[in-house]
Length: 309
Figure 1 (cartoon, rainbow, N blue to C red):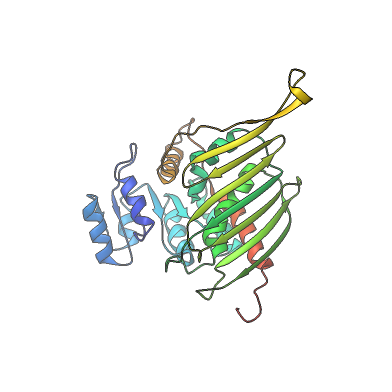
Figure 2: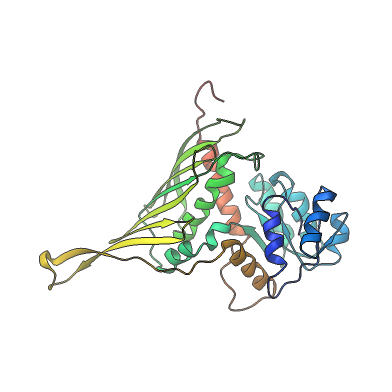
């Protein structure tokens, strides 16, 4: 484990008890933090990346995005499997370099929301949506300010959009403004795909409450996903001669089993490293790059309100 900040600590917690994996040790730029987290979970704190790399077969990288290429690239060069947190890099050039250096090793990207049970339930339908409405709002915290809200939060939903509909991006329109930092803190994007699907996405890290919701409009169906509650409510159109008027709307809630998405993500990574044929789905480096490309297109499309940029 490399990086034991706010998210890295959760990786450590899960890895310490994950079947099929052994938490050998961890490294952090802050030796005191590394020592404290290692002691809590019965692991060893390594003074540098090189000494840790000699003792492990796979690593999770949860360092600032600007350091992803240096840290993950080093580990890949040493022949290790790597899961790097999202966004996988600061640019497409860096993402391409990571992919090239991965070779035949597993390169996974930490798009944890993909592993949310309600997202997996929607994906299991195999029905590409016609329209998506997404809200991902959060209160302001001083973490992840090395990237803007599009790369910090919206990128989760862009990855899910591509998982639901594999067609190419046809058009991106967006607006956003900085509010409490010098980067974009709130943004709205309209992403149109070649299939005709349109997604309207809003992401904010300066809201008064935390909201994580997706509404999907499919042919003859509608589903509302609450990521936090892990609930999926829906309706579908039912037709037939025995129905008054020939059609009616009926509830179509999809039951899901609650689970910790981060644990599922790490289970998928471990399974991929072990080349298990029945492994769960994995967000690999190519999928991570695609989400990054669309996120960067959103950033490019943003027009900052005069006087706030």
